[in-house]
Image 1: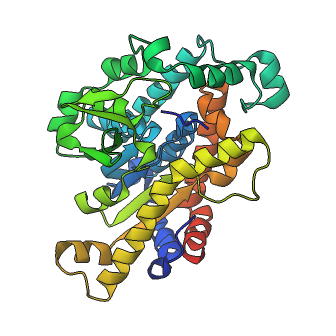
Image 2 (image 1 turned 135 degrees about the vertical axis):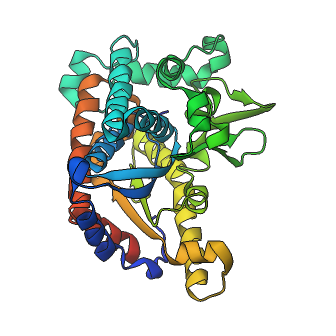
Length: 368
């Protein structure tokens, strides 16, 4: 669920996003109690504890009347996806918000008893960044010597308990209201694997969030899986092909950009990990841009061509807000940090739906 630690060059056909998002915000004006809502598809990037930022953005969107028709997610994004879907089935928008709050409250509570949590002195000196926290440095060295098959032979995973206590996977598989797409990486082939609604299970969601230096590979039907962030973060193309909503929202936690080359050992490692976990999405965006260009020229016909010609992709990114915390903070699910991330996500979600930051982000995507 956490990471160890460019934008596409051709999105010319997508320059109408900013105007579309401002128009879309007007459609959402009725909010929870004033309108019937607007169907959307959601693509939720993974990023460990930074997934609490996505929680905040989703809260803002739910409060303004969006209706999730389909959701894809990887790692932390997969957890957000299934908890949102479960809550929606239980009680609509309010149920979804309560379900997401339960997920992150429980994660924060479990972190309080973790031997890897930062000490009070570390927090006072460096905030939520764990780069120099003794617990983080020690565990990093530990996992370079021993594998999880040695130090965690029973594969204990507190996230498994969360899923068993709060998610009815049989109901998710039967549901016809929200399509789900969970990304994982097949260990044997190294290829992405997308688990769709009828395949969603505890094992599939755990597989999506399985870092190989922390947990055992997850076995499903004779194959083994690691974190989906290595190959599809999140599964964007399967979501677009498998959903009907014109409006697709991509909730990003990272971009592939860096202000300057890193020079310290830790900064180099952090940069490599960021490239590793953002690369798949950059490739998907480039492929999507090419496909849409073909569809616009009439070279891609049929249902897929029509889908791409009428698609509006909206990008809400928290990169600028999250950058000061550093990559290591993704491994820091302490309650205070999760609350701060949630508040930042609420702010960014409200800005995006009001057409301010969202428009800027979309124009940046188109012009990069």
